Image (cartoon, rainbow, N blue to C red; front, side):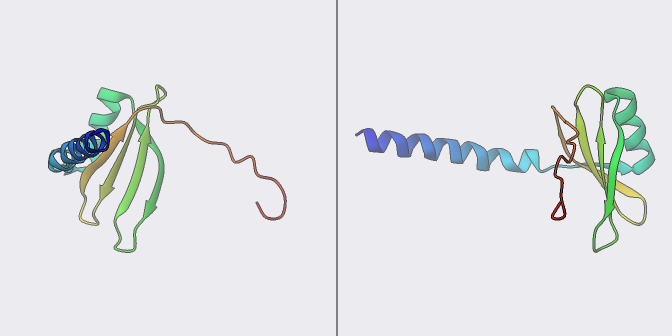
Length: 101
């Protein structure tokens, strides 16, 4: 009986995750400049890193001094989507030393 209880709990957790995934997957999209202005005004976030994908999309990480962060992806045509947000962003200093660093 104990074994079945664990399976039921695992199944319930998995079901909750799978059923909530479509809601979490909905991205907020718009003009890049408007998204950046909104994130700066409402959350104090500013771009701290960026890079290009193989398809020419720009990926940007934004963060606030309070630890909030967001990731936006911008198409070459200027349309951007907010892909992820979170808390407790922390800049990590590379402490590796030596020739293999």
